[in-house]
Image (cartoon, rainbow, N blue to C red; front, side):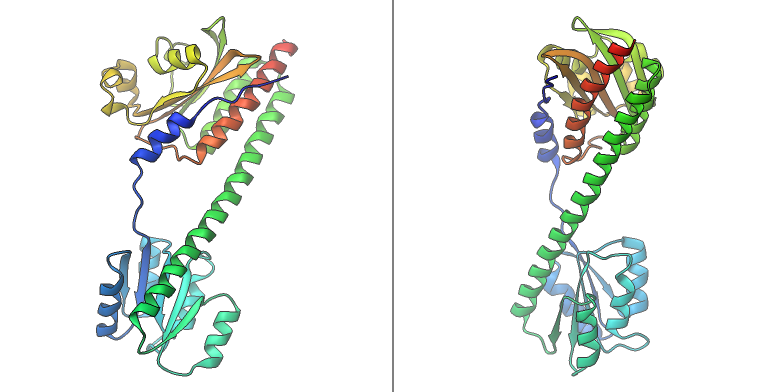
Length: 315
């Protein structure tokens, strides 16, 4: 059996057009106020910089703000050494890149910290501003690479699990609508959509056979006469709007208003060049789908063509 891959590039362009790169976060830790202010002024243009006068305060900030790209910490501080503080951040924030500032020859502490992966580099005081900027820039690039690899691994594992679940449900299927509901639930939880509808299409029209998850109540009638769905079926290409309130053609729809739907993506499921179903995702906030999630949507649409073929053969 041959299946077609729906074109999601137009949706991806919508998502990318409204996403603006944010400044990476940085935490600077030093018990000397002058050094702390100097570090802040040095990096505030390129980073969102948080300041802490001690390791204890720095841990409090991390618990509030979450992961940061780079931490720069002084080594000699009262209450807690820099290396001790940094070691406490490793379990929760393994991708954060850590830099130590030291005016002393604490070689043993520094070597242990570097060898254990807790410290990326150490800089001696007084530091050269240009050298420190170069080190920090490389540290930020390293963080982005580590973060990307971690996200890719997590996403790949999630995709494998989702597709495995879909196959398992199809193999155990005894009733088509029950299976569609179970698959819709698995997809919704994985992609974090507020509503999911899988609805069969026959002769380019929505059939009554459908399964749903989330906020949708009248599952069999919800997609009827929807502009996005109609275009997806007619063109055999994924259609969507990531910010419905800003779309004058859709903003007045009673359907979207009543369910507070602000983003909608509809992907046709295609088998042998025919639309056999639609895969509708809705969110109650604009732009809840990341560009990386689109690949998961693509894989699910391909898998669903195979699943529906089997379900029809068994009924």
